[in-house]
Length: 83
Picture 1 (cartoon, one colour):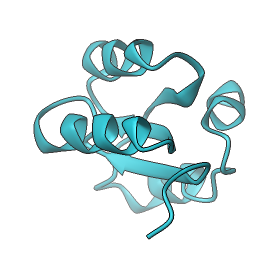
Picture 2: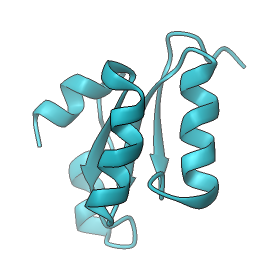
Picture 3: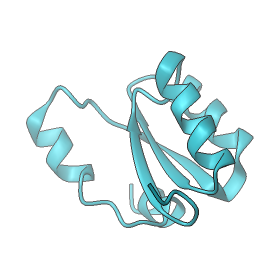
Picture 4: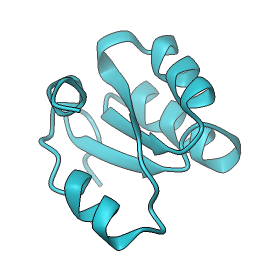
């Protein structure tokens, strides 16, 4: 799979396996939007990677909420600027 330069959404990216996934993707050259309910944890992970990651507070268990953020552009910083 080509990761370098690609955009990703990681749900639950503020902690645990989600945070580890964010780190692995960014370290491989990906750009990541972190979707999580925990703003503090998500923003902390996003700050580690500067413009290669951003945070969006999102409840992925809510269908309506998910429809608002699912079609994010491949540049996470642009996606987050719209929130």
